[in-house]
Image (tube, rainbow, N blue to C red):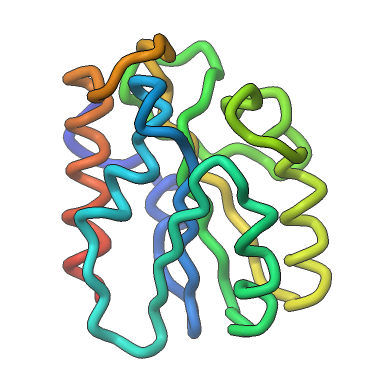
Length: 159
């Protein structure tokens, strides 16, 4: 990943009113752990920013997301879009079932978050990080860890 976000990724990561960041993934599947890695390193101080780690069952945080009534929801997950390892991209909601790591999610992400988006009226963005490995092992690849660290640093600076 380059030293700067693309304009599209920067816009996706920018908070808007009450902003909820939801991280996804499994720490047991190498780079699929990018979401939990970010979540474990972010500490929001602002009451208008909230962080939830959905792990591999995002449907379990759907009601919490709806009840909080965010203006914007940012999903962070490992993805496969054919980019360079560690590259971050905005993925359209309609494309997340093909490009995010489906095997670790028990229910289609597009269905879960379409419902959340409809019930809250929130802007919803998905930022995927290109995985290098989804092997059954702990730890992120160096490229993905670098991007995950940058994401955590960014979120800590804004909130």
